[in-house]
Length: 264
Ligand code: 13P
Image (tube, protein in one colour):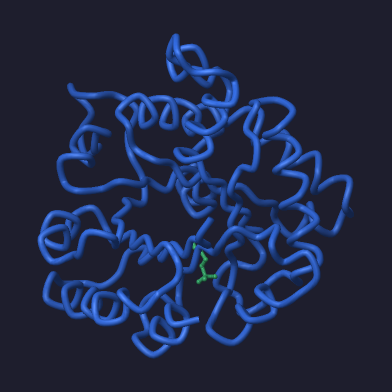
């Protein structure tokens, strides 16, 4: 399977003109890439970028609401996102968990609603510095608890049609649900996790998904200060094949970085 590189623009850039220009850096290089590329701009640029993109370049949004319509001022429904051209949605980013008090219960509702609408999900999980300092067991417990709460009540039965087997279900979930391990202390700090430690957590995430949610070979990305230089350490280490791709923030705004990452 191709490695995934998802680019999260966060709240950037400030105008549609700049967004189109930035998007162009991706379009120029995309055809030479051996990776699956997903670009996640702010909501308001999705529609315009959809018309510029080539078929294989995917678009994602950075959030979604859990209701389909109604009196929810300022919110964006899963269906609206689909109509705007988003195929993926990032859910549970730590910046939303921390700055907007987004809870696991809210994240769970968003995941269920997005799955129902047919969007593909990039669920972010990851511990803060305090938990990391408490040691490996504390990190494992934290991540496991996030997964259990965020993925509660996955609609296994509705995803599993009468003709598909458990293996089929596993395939459906596998292609619709991606996890991004993003330790909070590594985001935007320039201090990425070590490949060895990240792989340990990624393996734990895979094991948990496997045993609780029947997902065979789930895809798990690493995110947190990934750039064109340190990404090579994550691609060339022992057991690096456990990392199914990357979720990239700051470097996704720099044409030179984009170029060097996409052409890898
Ligand atoms: P940075 O790459 O800037 O650390 O951001 C990572 C991130 O939060 C992607 O969602």
